[in-house]
Length: 390
Image 1 (cartoon, rainbow, N blue to C red):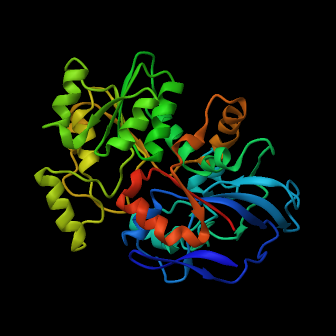
Image 2 (spheres, rainbow, N blue to C red):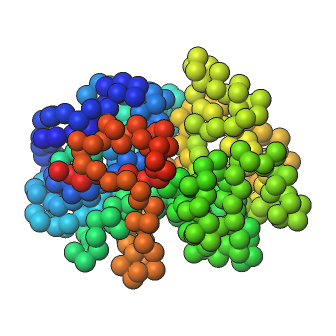
């Protein structure tokens, strides 16, 4: 089959690889109709995620048609059209029964590596390094889906792929990011990063009752999309001080809640950002936490901090004093996507939300290498890329 394959930093190729096979009675094989390039895939593309191996198939946002099921899969049959959660989960372990499916105790066969790095491993992920199981991803014509009797959700034929596929990751991720803010009536929520997850965090914050959302980014094309969703906007590079700009528009009190939709590759022009660049380049620091520092400093007293951006390891000069001194709550983590797919699918089906508005670029698997470069460079106002499985 044809698949998008990683060969090294900024070296992504479309190649022929072996077709997937049923390996476990709970497996299914899905023929991919639509897949997407996620912003977190760019961390792999830029060489920042460890434990990648040449030949790994990329991609964790995908949907398609079931072509084969293992003997234990009774809820699906050949021909069913499904969306597949990016996190792989068994549905029966303690974290899964709590609804914390991204922390599945049975889905990561390489858990001992993350046990050393983090103290305990989370679950497995499609196409996201051997730290998370080494599972082949969905930027391919076919995918083996483990625990298919628990994860995939059937999609009505009347909902187009482009409205459904983003329910596999970024729409639920934006929603959980907003939910983690414990939004209350009248709250002001500030969001750093207006990429696709940031856009869905904006929509979700309003859905959950925020009175105002302030979106911060350095690209005007992304800020225009945020403004169209109802947010007020601040261009990070066009103000002298983001904190002062936020204090001005919040009457000096700062936001009630803040969301990091940037993660480990944050940009900035301040001295701390320059130090982060240098340390990450020589592998003295895994993550560039400029945005995370800034939003913690900006958050009002007693506020809530939500981290949706991906971080991999250790970050220097974390403002723990500000977090403690202002009594802030901090929440984050991989999205428990199984929890959100069905209710958000119902919103899409009702017409109240159209996730496809974030899609700016389309192509095929053959176009993936060029579209990875376009997305990573922010060329042509690239906001979100989807690929057909052909």
